Image (cartoon, rainbow, N blue to C red; front, side, top):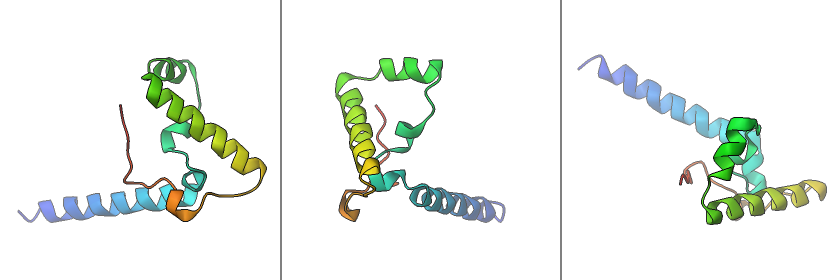
Length: 90
């Protein structure tokens, strides 16, 4: 039993670091999800091609909105930032 406490504590610490990095990276302030920022090599392009149409359309909308905000040097209102807990996988 004593061995489980450090594992649980390290898991919470690691999750805390992930949340911190997610917010520091800044893509969430533009409404992007982490997966929207992945470099598109051939494997990623194939995965994107296989996305359901609604998921693909949502991704394209987020990217276009982020480009527009970047050009204008603006961020979304904080209420519209993507949150770490909003992990959407299809």
